[in-house]
Image 1 (cartoon, rainbow, N blue to C red):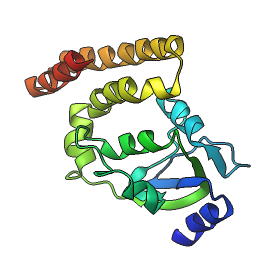
Image 2 (image 1 turned 180 degrees about the vertical axis):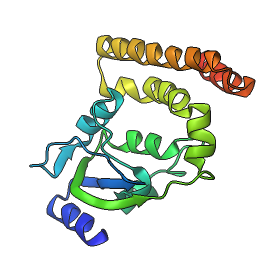
Image 3 (image 1 turned 45 degrees about the horizontal axis):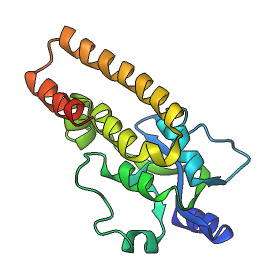
Length: 184
């Protein structure tokens, strides 16, 4: 994995992050980028991600150039549960992104993982997603495009909350999301 990712970074000195396909359980994730390319603009990747067209990176298995980490203290912002995604959004407007179109990462699924115990149960992707869209969206989208993107995101967010209410999910879930919506 490291050999293949480092080779991509070596071929393209402007690359600051390299990712690959990931196997999670029995599913291959992070697919969707054109297979004939290994070099992408960082801005292009974030725009695709925020528009929910492609989930092209799994930060926990990606290769990150050392100078990017050293330049930000802390590299991972503590205001997000999904701090790894926020850190990527923070740097990808300044660098290129490399991608290996093969499975070089593996994520184990288990019921005690943060994904299972917090992210999936609380819907934190909506909470953090809204805050990240507002923080990083202006870097990547013009105001009109960002407003349309935020409206679509809020529509999905409200649908999630309505489904959660119908399923009688715990009150803590709503308190958690109320905080995000007040910050918005």
